[in-house]
Amino acid sequence: MAPHTQQLTRPAVRLRELTRSFDTRTVLDGIDLDIPAGQFVALLGHSGSGKSTLLRAVAGLDHEVAGSGQLTAPERVSVVFQDSRLLPWRRVLDNVLLGLDGKEAARKGRAALAEVGLEGRERAWPSELSGGEAQRAALARSLVREPELLLADEPFGALDALTRIKMHSLLRELWEHHRPSVLLVTHDVDEAIVLADRVLVLERGRIGLDLTIDRPHPRSYRDPLLGEYRERLLAALGVTEDHQ
Amino acid sequence: MTAVTTTAAVPVTVAEERPQVRRRRRLSPGRRLPATRLAGPLLLLALWAAASAAGRLDTGAIPAPWTVLESGVHLWTDGTLSNDILTSLQRAGSGFAIGLTAGVVLALASGLSRTGEALIDGTVQLNRAIPTLGLIPLFILWLGIGETFKIAIIAIVVYIPIYLNTHAALSGIDHRFVELAEVQGLSKFQFIRQIVIPGALPGFFVGLRLGVTGSWLGLVVLEQINATSGLGYMMFQAQNYGQSDVILVGLLIYGVFGLISDSAVRLVERRVLSWRRTLSS
Image 1 (cartoon, chains in turn red, purple):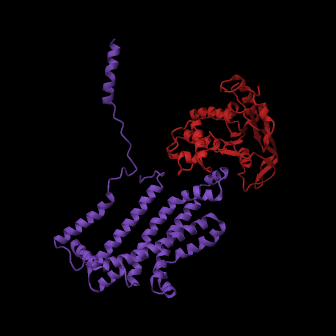
Image 2 (image 1 turned 135 degrees about the vertical axis):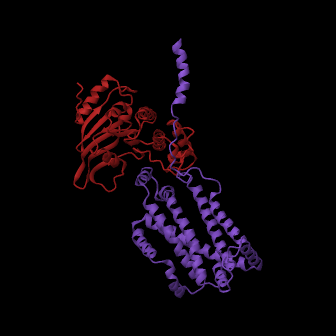
């Protein structure tokens, strides 16, 4: 059931006693976490539970946040944000290549765009893309650097439901192909269950639940066995379903 | 069978009965008409010519367009006009170039570092509060009544709007793009070249257009008060001899230069900012 055990040997991300606080409020309260190389992890939590703070800490983006603890992450880290964050003054391909130079990079950029289904849109302006297309371009931008760790902060939160389903399978496909470690921050329990092999629930600054989801891919939202996971996760989030 | 025939007939009547969908009232000004920018000036010129031809204007105060043209040609063949134009262009050009450079350099220094901001921004704001033309007497004392003080005044008139608008655009750059640059591992230099400068360009162009207009404005004032050559000097002399046609020649040339330089900036702006879609496109 674990087809990539050989890749799980060395942890890609390692957090020890990670603490982050804003003013007097402690947001992350001594987190210990190992993410093995190549693992697809989803991080769930209420809004304000600190999931974005954790992701930003791993990304090294929390410049003015007080905190302590140990944190190791791979050299090549890419981040996908909730908004596509394409620079409006650069064409799509140039956005994908932001920070890279050379012919070889351009070739990789075109390949990455083709991989996310944006072949032929290299010369388009970001303002000409739909929301889903823009987010695909953002995925291409993160892939082209061949990340060892892909951090995604609610990357599909701003998309409509249909586009989101398509993006789920695209993200999973891309992961199968490139095998980076993934830390996907989301508030959508179904998204976490369908995509990830391991789901963490962040609660009051600590990891309240660490759940391995041992079901084959591609997964369906209607898979009854996933319902069990859903209930456990919802319970950990303090939500009870009263349809039963 | 009857049902089939009725349904076949229905769509036609429905299409006739239902009110057609009316397009919403358009709120943007609509497509631009060709060469409309010239329509107003041309109309004004036509009115002027018509009034002159009808003898309704005092030729001593407002000579006819053709008289102005004649004087212009006469002054040109004389060699005095070309000389005056050249002098004026040199002044405006040098002042503008210095002001442009100073405005951009100061805006970058102030927008990109906190030390720069502390040293520069307040000083420029102070400078802005002083009417630049009020500095003329002081600058004459410092720099003499030659070319230097004129160019200095024009440079100040130009640099202020360029600095203000570029600096505002720089400080307004979306923080999310800064974060993106960090994630993508951009160097400070790449960050400035690929994110800061393109992001500040729209503001810079607003300042540039104000600066171009300002350089002509400064020129007119300087040449009318403190000059021994140039277009303004020519007009000042004409005033002494009551040659209103020569004054109008000077004004027209100022106007044409202003129009040309503004159009040039617009053209460059449209090229450089082609990614923008606004009301004007």
